[in-house]
Image (cartoon, rainbow, N blue to C red):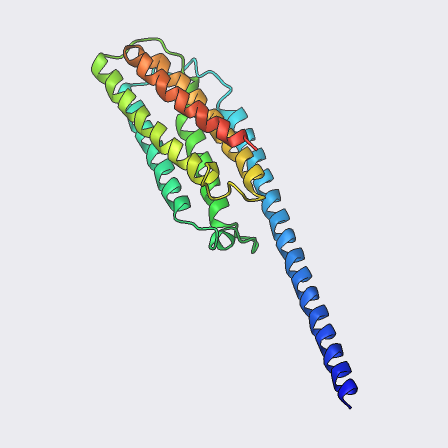
Length: 227
């Protein structure tokens, strides 16, 4: 009788164990499927950003008048604000809540993917004219200082944004999504590098200080391609 009871218990435990393994495997399969969809969305976003860059950033606006310092300063501050807002939002996401920020419930994309997409669109649209309009005159030193200060603000916001994503303690630093998100961020950083070059050309009085900021941007760019 005792042997029979032990046999029944053993059978029950075996069935329970098999069910638990099956549930675990199903959970892992669902997680992998979810991540595959997220990677696909990020790949699509990277392609979209690249197409937008090709369209808006690879044409010299020779026919347009020279940009004024107030407009450049305002644009830099506006972009810096978007970068800072996005960076702060990413910093407030933890590894525990990360999955909630990357849902694939069609047709809505996750908050993170939406945020990157909006940021990239804002960046390329707003800075295209600065990058593509030739420099034909020199601003006053006061105007150059205003542009430099706005550029410094943008550089700081950019550094914080990239670190929030892929820095040593970044949100996806140790995630399988680090690669595809890094590709998207790399495209964004390349636009920032192009913008930096266009800004430095317009502020010769602060070229040395601006070059130091460019070095920080290059460091952020390097983070997006590190594995």
